[in-house]
Every structure is written in structure tokens, then in C-alpha cells.
Length: 371
Image (cartoon, rainbow, N blue to C red; front, side, top):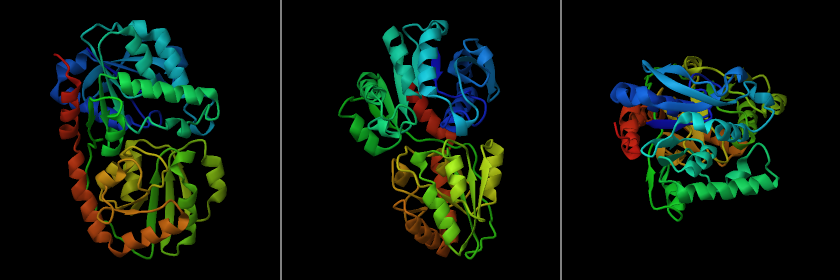
């Protein structure tokens, strides 16, 4: 049996930052390994506290996957009351016996707090997908950041790296860091299942910017707003997402900036069709799905050089690098605007590397699932 663990409900936004990547894997599985898909179990969260611990099904790619929610997740991301990681870990400890793990099972772990309860049971292989580096992760926690719990969580993450049967990472830098602790580490890619070459009526004197992501401190969105409001060539900035920083960010916004809230997949695509350039300004990332999705719709990118971004969106070809300041973002937007057609074509061409079938075929091979 394949068991997949993530802090998502596997159905819709806004729960689960890596939801698109996970759903693409499950769609691949449904199409190419339907027998494995029908026997798999998804362990995640629910927006309905009454059904925690109750197995049901979710349909993905034409397969009714078994689904066991072990925790309740807030839906108002601007006013989250506590750590979802902590709730998920406690819920998994409480309900792990319902999974029915056996020695030959494969645990595909997308959220590290699932590793402890599963590993301690000693049943099945544990393959950990690291969407961003676990090292120094304590510096980017939303809760317990200045508590002893942050240090304890960091030590736990090092233990996860050491004890995982196999680790899948998104960039060579993380691979090199992890290989000091574990000799079974492999680089894979995030994937997209939608590519659409759009002919935009681009106006270099009226550039439409877009940000998509959680409104959290690590995304460093303030300088994006400052740059958009100050740059004469920028006509608008649309901010898609929600989170604890929203109220503060709204105080920084002027007439050009609009907040769209959390949107589903089709509405995000509509925003991408109506914008020209994606701007990301994170201080810590793995490989943001948003960048791959934007490239798949022919959008050039302005971004900081963190995580694996440079590997998937090469700077000076697809993307333009910023140092995180408003002035740097302003300069980068102008560079992209001056060669927009070339950057747009390059983005769309590069996005072919992230087709969900080829990417997830490789990931599936690393899992070593026995049919």
C-alpha cells in the first residue's frame, strides 16, 4: 500500500501550499498506475472538524482515493489560531492505528511532522519529499519562533533527514546539504499539468504585475507593493492569496494594488492570463509552484535567487533577479519589459520540462511501490 501524508485536504485551495504538486502526482498515479491508486490512502486535514479521524474518499483523476483526515485546518488564513503542523502531528499520533500500516508499505511523506509517528511504528519504507530545505527551517516558522519548541523542531528535522529511507529534494543545493546526513538523496522537480501559450497585448508603459502565494513574512511582499506603486511603467499589481500579513500589507497599498484573496485553480489561471509579469520576493523557498504555473502560461518572472528558483527559471533568460528591495524590483521589471517577447517565449518553452507525467514517472520510480 502507498500512503501519502500532507497537511492538505487534497481537494481545493487554500489548504496546503504544495497542493498542486501533490494533486499532479495523484493524477499521474490514477492515469498510469490505477491499481496502486485505488489501494492508496491519503492522510491529511479537513475543513470540517466533525469528520476528523473518519475515512472517506476524494476523487482525483477519475479515481476515488481513500482519505483519512487527522486534523482540522483553519480556512481563514489571515487569522490562523495555531500551528497546523502541531495539530497534524497530534492528530496523526491519535489516529495512526487507523492507517493499518504493514512492513511492505511505502510512506510518501510531504510534511515532516508525519515522519515521527510513522517511523516509530517501524512499518514500511519512509520516502520524504522536501519541498524546501529543512535546515534552519525554525527561522521561518509562524508559531513558536522564539520558543524552545523551535529549537526542538529543528533538531527533529535533522533527525528526519538522517533517518529517512530516501529523500527527494527540489534543488542541488539542498541535495548537497542533505548528503552530509544521508546518502540516499535525489533531485526531482515540481510539475504542472496545464500549459497555455497566451498572446498578450503587452504595453511596456502599462505593465500588469501579479503575486500569487501565502501572505506571510517569508514572502517579503511589502517591497513588491512599494515598487509597483512607485514605478510609472507599472499599471497594476494583483495580489492573490491570504495570510497573516494581509492586514499590514493593505496599509501599504495604493491605487495600483488590489487584493484578490485565496482563489481556486481556474481563477488563478484567469489572473495569470490578465497579467504580464509574475513577481516573487521570498527570503526562503524551495521551488514555488506559482513560478512553474506562470511559466506554463508564458509569464516572465521577477524573483529573488533563493532555493531552486534559478534552476527552473534561469535568470537573464526567463527570469530577472532582484535582491529583495523595492528599487531592485523596479529595475528588474523594466529589464523584463524591454525584452518582453523573448522572455515570454523562453518561459513557455522552459515550462515543457515540468510536464506532470514525465516528472511524476521519475518520482514514482524512486518510491519503489510493489503492485
